[in-house]
Amino acid sequence: MERVDDKPTEESVRTAMDQAWRDHHHARDQTWRALQMEAVLGAGLVTVDVQFHDVVATTCAGILAVLAALSGFLISLHHRKLERRKFIHIINAEEWLGLHRDDLIPKKATHPGDDKRSDIVKDAAVSAPERLRIREIVNPFRQNTAVFIMRMHLAIMAFAVLMIALRAWRAPA
Image (cartoon, rainbow, N blue to C red):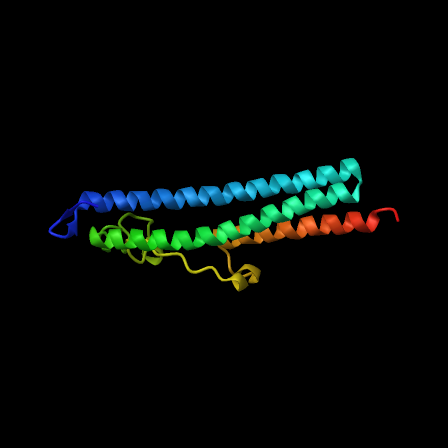
């Protein structure tokens, strides 16, 4: 950052905030791509099982799907930590720029029919995402994108293990 009298310039703070948003979006995109790859491997597992009816082939494809889902799970945990850091950085930049003001997004309705606006807008600030705890993944009352993604990783792992078990059970002795 450029500094004048030991203070960053407004432009450098805006640039840093923009970069933090880009980093956040890049990490989220990577997380979704990992989940897509796992889904493709899960579909491939079904294809291998149906085509070959072989416990070794199904097990190999299943292990690949489980490892991908486990990696995706760990990537998602890492990205949630990154997301929190980036949002804290964004919040600090917004605060430094004076963007945490209720007059930027009025709490009161400004147009006829906008009565609900005052209920949903608390202030103009972005808030940091909460820490993701493993127990939240199994809590059906927790619903956000990060929890959904984590549930999908676990579902793909469970599906792959189930496919392997079913193929082993149906294999001729």
